[in-house]
Image (cartoon, rainbow over all chains, first blue to last red; front, side):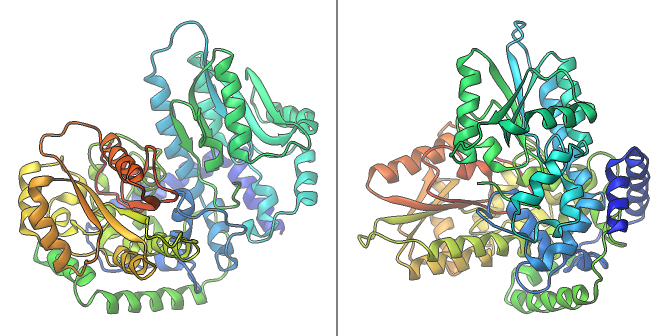
Length: 269
Length: 269
């Protein structure tokens, strides 16, 4: 447990970027020496990374989740706990997130704005702007059913670390005069702690923070697309929309361009 | 070159399934011994599989493609040729395809049909029902711009091998009395060779094969969704739709459930 928390701290804490940079160099060094060969099997060593212990291999399971082939799943397969933990903490998650944000930044930089300040970009919060990895790292990396009590207790600590890649996009958008809007499935009674958590992690300058009314019953897609419709009806142009769940980015109006961040921990339909 | 062709034959030829089964056992054996640890970095050996030589790591690039974050790309990054070749020939592609088809089969088996034979399932052809990997394996694995002349010459050979996972779904649907419809960007003048190729590879019993009129100018999404609309207007219920491109499965009517097969070789918008 202590080791896990230390690793989480290393990934997301102040020392994250140093470790990240070092890893990029390692990878570059390793691949520079790799010959261009096409084997019938994964390269030696990568099989261990697959985490297949019966059932679908964990990396194929993760791809199926990310490409929206796998839907309505309740928990990460028990056999994939090690794989998902390694993915989330081992740098792979960060690299995949960076690739998504690189695309989003390039898209945003290429936009021609109307000059009237009406362009907005929708951000989900959990696993998009803030990370609940410290919670999931101590609760089976998604292999256990959702526990509202313990998860909400974690949320109320207000200690969720930033997802640095998303924050890079957030700051870039502000510099471009595209206004960030947070749209979250967190409920209205969590507004104060959510604002405190966001500020503590370096977010500022958002135009609006939309939380779900307490007791509101609707699917995530219905709730979120309804709120985007309100933004649009108020004259805003949703130029972008980023989230870790397909339910963040499906349902008209989706936003002119959508971005799906990786999340192999849980599914929200 | 000879080695590549041999490998393609091994992956897709008659000996494909034996190699595939052997690999599954290897993976199972390797992971059974793997301890559940969460390192800050990918496991030893997997770094070489990333194929990062500047720019985005190749596995993150591939994920961005599959999750529709990366769009309108013209070629595979040159630095990723080895990675993509290894992915396509090394078993990983087959595993990822199998995971998608497993979902599709489970979904199909769970459907309650109307009993009037009106349910259809739309199949794309290239990189969905048939594989052009023998072509791409000798043309840079997508790193070179599309060459219509050489690619069409390959198509006219009618030698494209089956994608076995897709065929498993195709046969399952027929057994369930869900009618397969091929809907392809191949043009009408390629009908005869396409039918011959499909039959040679073990496909039979499809309800309809829709090819694009020669000279028809429209985006893939507009063309394919228009053809699906015609099916729907004719009283058919599109219960499923599978393709390797997002343009196969976007655009109303998409079909009740869509499936995205992996394809890191090319993009069709």
